[in-house]
Length: 286
Image (cartoon, rainbow, N blue to C red):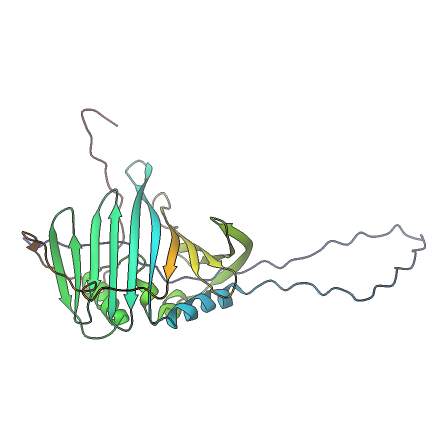
């Protein structure tokens, strides 16, 4: 029997959300009342322009694109919506490592699953640690080519993997609609540009570190059209742009006894989407 490995939630294409115009109300003087002359001002202060969220997002993507290798850690929270509209949140700790042009490793340890994704430049492998089985795909090309083939052929999407894609900016800028600069807010003590983006099916919020290193610090995705509007949230930390990667870090060696299975193919017209699941009952009705 063929079984399908699936690790949902790749960083999706971000759609930009339109920013509202800012206005200042002026107080009108009563009619027929002489007005005192305004005191002379040395220099009128020009209004501070609102930062462009699309530009800030582009700076973040371009900065990562220039890094030849890096690693980052993330605390991820994922909503699961059950029948009846009940929503539960589950956690996962992720470590992502990238070495351009064709090496990536994503380690995920969570409440519901524990998986490892590896690409060594020739083969993309996904290993399920809990079930002790794995599947692989032969791929020629860079990180982007591997992720593209995995999604188109097998519906595989992996959280944070696209941070290493050379086309990250294109993916995040696809089908742009509106954008909003929310303000300068802190994420765990780090001042960040808080941005909001939108498209028909997804609402996203992005926090980009303010300063000379525009790092992604927090990311929230809301699936607007799914029941319960589930969210995926990631806090990113421990960015390292000079990691000392071991020679075998991106090479998969099957653990003793691990079973090899096959990825199930999907039709080109299919768009894999998460479905509501029914929680298991233990000794009574929930």
